[in-house]
Amino acid sequence: MNDRLNEYMDGLFAPYEGTKSITELKADLLADLQERYRELRAEGKDDATAFEQTIDSIGDIEETVQEMSNLSRALERQVVTRFDSSDLKGSDFAGVTARGAKFGTSALRGADFSNADLTGGRFKSSDLGEANFDGANLTDAVMTTAELAGSTFRRTRLVRTDFSMSGLDKVRFADAVLTDVAFRKTDLRHTSFERCTFTGVDFTYSDLRGLTFDGAAFTGVKFDRAGLEGVSMRGAILRDCSFRGGWSNKYYKALRTVNFDGARMDKLTYAALKSFDVAPPNVIVE
Amino acid sequence: MSTSKVTSDLLRGNTDTMILRLLAESDRYGYEIVKLIAERSQGEYELKEATMYSSVRRLEADGDITWYWGDESQGGRRKYFRITEKGRATYARNKSNWEYAKRVLDTLL
Image (cartoon, rainbow over all chains, first blue to last red; front, side, top):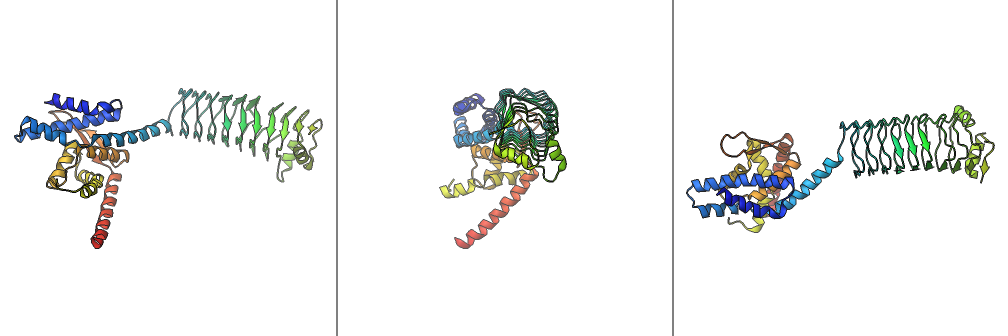
């Protein structure tokens, strides 16, 4: 008899096979049906009647399967994107698509995110030291208060990415276009930016002392209240950049140490510098 | 079953709460749930297996119930469902919503 019930169930579930949740449903249902059939037989029902009544107790399976697949899809989505507080040291996420993934407060030291789509990803307060973000898409990603020491960002897509208050010691940005990226209150003294362009980037309150930005292009970049002592911007192109130090004499004193030799800047940026008594020599005002 | 479509939809709409009520009394397995509902309604309402499992999976996903394997000696293992604290709260809320709706309907019908 179990064979006949099994066969019936196989037929009933044939169109839906393949997912774990449906296989579980089938197993749960079969256990119930077997028990019902045994009881009906024990009550004295003949084989055919017992089988008929057992089958009749199933009801509309199609609706249940439909509801369940919606449910499990929602669950799977959660599983894919929730890595909060996880220990994922050295994990391989190369090339994955994990939009909006939540990696907050996770141990991701040495993780490989190369070429991954991490749009809108949240990495707040995570340990991302030595991680590889080469070629990844970090549009709208939040990396605030994360430890990123030694990680690399080569050809990384950086749009509105927020690195504020994160640890960026020995981090390498190379061949990247940084658009509306925030580096507020970060220590960038040992960060390298090679062949990068900066548009709408916010360096407010950051420590840029001794950094070399020779030949880089800056458009709408904020250097307000940043530590700028000994910064080199030789041959750089500056458009509509802001250097505001409030009442801090120290800021303006440091600003005078910035090397703008051969830099090209628009009249507004130049005028802004001049109004603070910083008149860099050897610049091309356009 | 002599129930009309409307009555049956009304009953079906309260399946989650019926199951929570049964599990609030004791941990139970699938077949036990449908059997108890038939018994307690004196055969007036027959909860179909498919409807029951829709409900159970939904309750699981919402964190209102959990399950564990029983340790039956004979026959197959049974999957027992257990209500969570959240499930108890859901049951209390649904029950009081029903009491309220019933009062209002009694004044209107």
